[in-house]
Length: 112
Image (tube, helix red, strand yellow):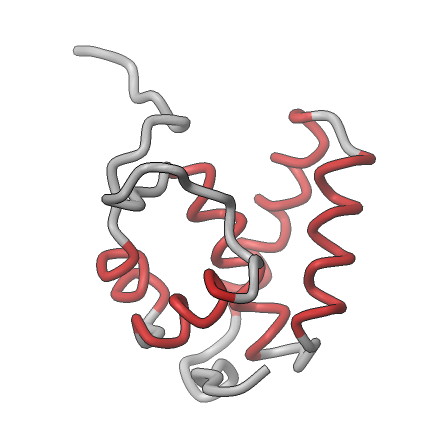
């Protein structure tokens, strides 16, 4: 059995939206505002590691109600000030907190 490569770009935004129970339009809005990991490929596929960042962005926007400027600042701090191990542990912690939220607690965001 081959090991999974969490950095390989394999998921389109539509699949990620389904995983997050969000609208594709919302994720595209995040993308347009530069909140998602940048992709140069026309297909714009995302990796498992990208999904963690995307879910964090969605959490900040939909649960914490942080605007795009605030989210950019937070994600830039995460990228610039944490090594991969600490960043991964932090995102895992956020993911575990998000799993405890009910669907009622997380509402899809149309405008941030």
